[in-house]
Length: 113
View (spheres, rainbow, N blue to C red):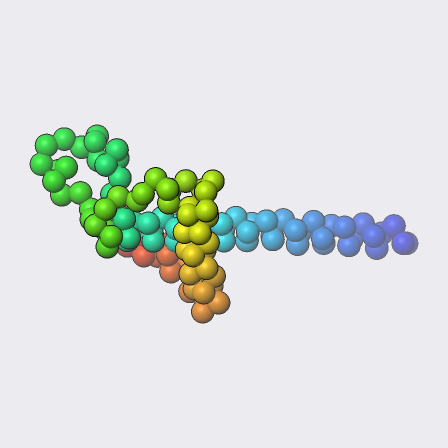
């Protein structure tokens, strides 16, 4: 009888942990979408991405609030500046989560894409 109870609790724990991993992947996806949304809002479109477009379309690339491309120092995550930038953006995402607006970034990204 004890074995049956332990088997049931192990099955329940597996179900809970599987659900927790699914929720974590959703949060990670939302966090990445928020990070890309903030990047596209602040920084200009990447010139290397625009190099595939030809002619007049290149003139109309998207401009960000900073009116420049993201500096390499900020793009790289292996230095203090890049880690600080990522930490600030993640902190903003945590504030959105605390306010109950976790899916806001994905909704806005879908609206503009």
